[in-house]
Image (tube, rainbow, N blue to C red; front, side, top):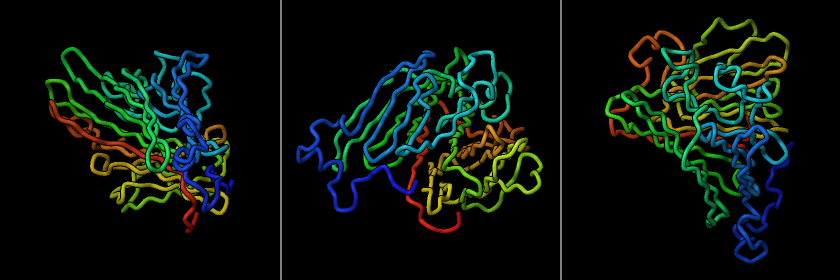
Length: 334
């Protein structure tokens, strides 16, 4: 697992050079984009990038990210559910995993009022979905765009304009969101980017590195557990949900070792000042959720107006997002 997907070696031409000198004629030979319809009817935009990642963008799930591969190695966690049973079932029954599930903009955390657990974005189809591919000085960049509307007749009207961007030669994918209040009323807008990491990069003893002042757990911490360390898989292990207080640097790193790369999750700290994690290492689960957010996921702050979420005024816009990258291990404790 030590090899990287960019196997050209030091001193060899860049991906852009292969296009410039004619050894590769078409950009799509280096950056493949396919629009697919799965057997269960799900629309998928499948992106494969030379020297980069291969990943799914899911138009029927708010342009969230599905299966993701670094070379021949899976990065994203997949849940135990083979299919989504559809409306009428709760979050846990419908959660298929994937690299990113976006929570909000009506609710994050437990059900509140008329909003179900973790809100509606991840279950809302995107409109005006289109993709583009362009040659840059370094290679080929792919962009997938669309809009996700969360609207009511006489209540909140929030529009999320999303762009998913990735390039050849870079094992990273970035989600860029413009969140607009297109309604007539101020509205609390909680957002949480539910990044889901799984095996084999998530492994026994793997540590998540976070620069923070403290950690608060939602429930009493099971004996022998650390919110930042993934133990061996075992039957009956409980999930640990935590908030990391006073986060600095707007990044968290799943540390690799001599055999595994680092996985770096970075986000826009100005709009996402908080970080929660969800560690569930039970057999048959084995997942780490890294969750930048702008609102409390649990605790007394949820009793505040808008459950503690910041307010977006009519006509106001936020720019926010998250980036997930697989990088060579930089050393230090794993």
